[in-house]
Length: 396
Image 1 (spheres, rainbow, N blue to C red):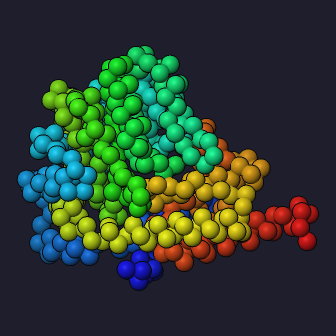
Image 2 (spheres, rainbow, N blue to C red):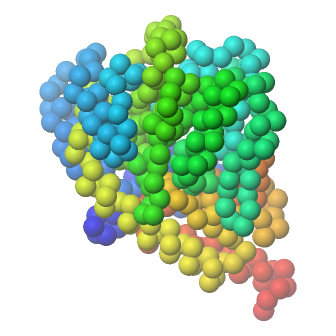
């Protein structure tokens, strides 16, 4: 298992956003890229083999979605998450981010309030601000290295809002929400007549000891909940762009489908549908090997920071392959943090400020890469930190 994920695969020259755009993103082509959320692991071999078989047919024309694809998703959700989804609830889309914006535009009106919970994946903000909706913030509460939902502040928003964009598991802080938290959120949504769009793209990337509850599966009536899911993060196939919305409410479903029809969105291509179905039918063993590897990497990062880089504290994730690093004790501005990591340590991370003002002083690290890369990145950061201390006269 370890050999599979320890394998180095050169991604340079493949038009990889993560590797080939380092100069454009960071201004330094030499950074070790640990930012954008795709992994440096080979996708399950079954997916590769299925794609090769399809590629041998030399015509790549307009493509229908087979019923077997929907069945693969339904079977996966039932087997992995104990959630029974009806076929008619499923709408395919070219990605979760477009789905968020489509749902906002189809189901809310201009100037209606849309709630987001920062620090959070930054397209949540633009799904409201770029569609002329009113963005309302319900910041997560951080105490002793643990994030929670601020339900008291959420109560104050109340019926003024129309929609809540929810991230479960949460990107970037790594929370896997407890059943009691989700139940309370459902009750509030029913009380105040909110629609909830629940982004559950990381639902399969859960560490041992945690359990992901699909929000809609907990609700006695899920008519006000729309769930966005995809195999892209789970099986490392985000470049193939195919996701699904689970929409139990018929009226909401019709509105979203009308929006997609209006802008002529096609969710299928010959390769995305092959990868989607194969992932859910044959990728389970690969996933079950991946998560212990990621857990060990996470725990080694935690131990290294504690021993050698105490000013950087890990908000230990319960899910996802993304680490939320609290760098506030370094006493740097966000611009200084970016310079430190990019030009001193030559490690390319995602600045926390991208995820909202509440992310100021934080950095996001992607550990979906061979572990020795992560340890080398940590060594680079430690050397840069030691040099900084020496320049400041604190040591040596």
